[in-house]
Length: 158
Image (cartoon, rainbow, N blue to C red; front, side, top):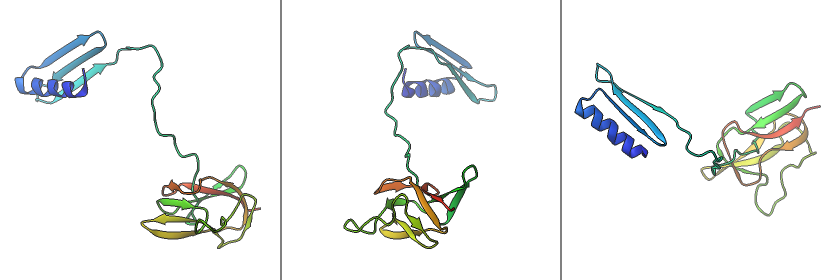
């Protein structure tokens, strides 16, 4: 039984005035009850159909993160600073395809250094560092979409 059929059954039960309907089959148990006030309550018990594992194609979470000068987390255990994206957009490590990257892992940066560019609605926003230190990690791949508050870089301020 698919969702459309279940929805049609619920509508039918509501219109008919029946207080309860139970359907049991080999792979499904479904019970539809209407309360005395006319409110409907549905209840279904899952039944194991297949013992084989099911593999679904789900999008992987972006393992890279974006940096923003506006929101920063400090990792207390090792004193590293995470720079997050202040906006939603597309992350770029360089100002144009023929230019070098703004920064690389191991680079020393100072406050106000441009770390990357995030494009939002055809506007290119330079993301500057609010801290001085050494770039430990770059968490986002070039030309990747980033979300608001997504970590972009990890900086060692010492």
